[in-house]
Amino acid sequence: QVQLVESGGGLVQAGGSLRVSCAASGRTFSSYPVGWFRQAPGKEREFVATINRSGGITYYADSVKGRFTISRDNAKNMMYLQMNSLKPEDTAVYYCAAGPRAWIGTYSSSINYDYWGQGTQVTVSS
Image 1 (tube, rainbow, N blue to C red):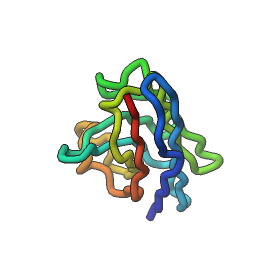
Image 2 (cartoon, rainbow, N blue to C red):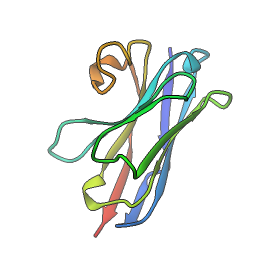
Image 3 (cartoon, rainbow, N blue to C red):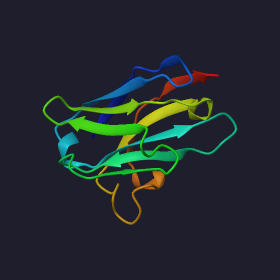
Image 4 (cartoon, helix red, strand yellow):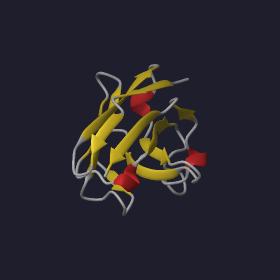
């Protein structure tokens, strides 16, 4: 079992930066790929980014590529999402997710992630 807790959300102006963090408990965190998803009001949850177990391979949604960076620190049981050049359309609740099946099939499908945090709100003002 893995428990995930996000932090670091908030209000930022367009063009600004924000880093959200995810603290994991459980000895198996480093064994799983992890990812970030987001959900805006009235919209479905969507994939943002994912990183493999060692942290050497990453994938991003086209909408955030070049602006967001996902990373992890297995020694600290932490994962991060650095968000730069934020846009109002990035406004959403951001969730971290993990699980052994995360990269089986398609890494961008939320149904492949077994463990989820409670989410942290990111609001980008124009």
